[in-house]
Length: 241
Image (cartoon, rainbow, N blue to C red; front, top):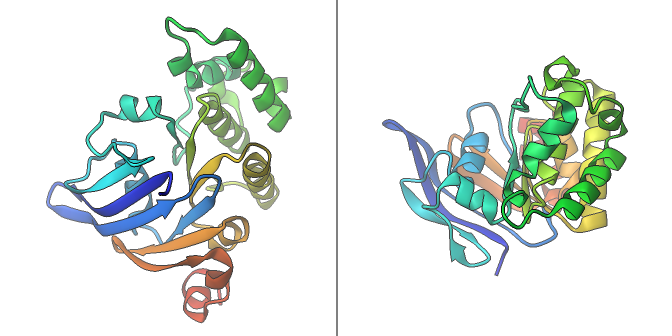
């Protein structure tokens, strides 16, 4: 049984059928990537998993439990954490306050103060720039720093599965490599399970174990990332071949 299983999901925006029977699975400890062009349904897939855009039919299972119709905050409480497209940080909060918001679900009556402090240091170790700017307002950070902050905020929730939506969007090549290096080391060091949505297909396939190709709401290919990197159809369509 996989950690995350998506079975025959159909998701609509009004009368528009955005996902047309999408099925995928992510095993514990894997990096799985979902690639495809603009409008293919990649972000909708993540938002359906998170309950933000509920599925009209189909099922989403986490460890065999049906989470399809849970509210987004209930899905977060189960450890499904998204670092969203466009970062969506809190621009008027400081870097540290943004990270503390990521740990909000751990801050209730059984507040995990020691664990939160330890994880804050872990985030600062992975993103030293954030430690330097921890008192700075999020809205004053560069695009790359905001992406680091969005990922750091997600990590503060201690995800069982981390959903990364377009982490390289709008970043310079050097920063893209840095972000993907963090993805690799995070998976290697903590065995964090990652579902990665990415338009930079070449980079995504280089770091992932397995991959799915989404086109117009349908899964068209599914295989190991290495095999898809060498598939002539994928090279022509997504890798600039």
